[in-house]
Image (cartoon, rainbow, N blue to C red; front, side):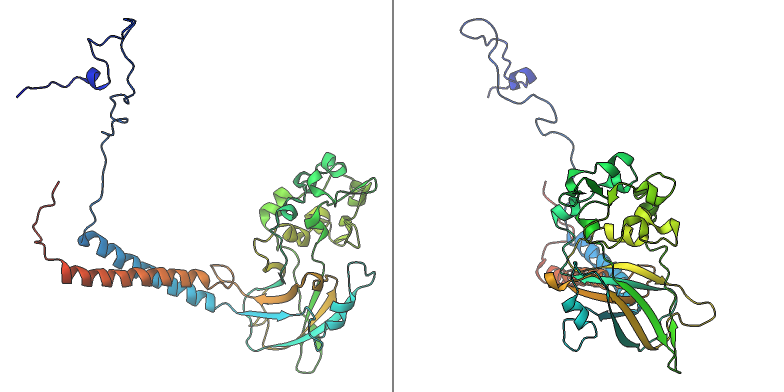
Length: 369
């Protein structure tokens, strides 16, 4: 038997005696270099899955996820929420006349009143949302239709906004401020809430309009252009097509909530990912002198109907909700944890039964290399 010696150069195709026919040099090899990486000799760790390691993992995941899911689900269910649709689709709806007669071209507002009853009191702070359905804010062209430099108060972008705002970029020679389809479709219904006292008197529920926008949006992304006052700063610009008043008149009574930094405007400009969404409209702060922020009883919702939705088969809602440490009402996360935990626990039981029934190997058997 002949013995062979290992030579790295031979493996690489560099034979000491091999010369090309022309005698110019050695033949070039197509073999990979003789390195640990290219020859796959790097040290590696491969787990060996056994019943002793897999089964405990399934049971531990199940025992951790199920209690977490139950806690999240119970917390979500403890959040009180009331929702009322005021679109006005049905003939018997109080807003039916407004829904069918109002359009973007209407010059006068339409008002309607919706009565409802809260069966349970709402404690702590209560958040009022408006909800829209079948409104696709996630459409690609819609999402792009804005100029963030203009919204940040840049003087150049105010007079010459991005072409992404087309066809809501200019009206004649005047640029639109704020430009784009998102700003043009700003939700502008006005909602007022009244509590009906036992005597029949209407008591207005105070609605806070400050603090509804994200801090980063309010203080970083949105800024008014420089100027002596807002009318001067926005001089030479036009209001969006569907707006009834210019941007510097969104809240004339509060200079810190007017123009581009108006919080209703900022909330709307943060586009939603799904066609059915809700956005924060107002906050009802807890009254320290009473036990309930909104006591149970009868309420009246006065609506200034400015936002038509029937043209795209949309729906409008008003939502009252409390929140918890995990946010608003959303049982999905709790259900997901419970489902994953239950599946893992069930698979652990099934694999344990299979292991005890069919595993006939000796516990001290060596694992072959």
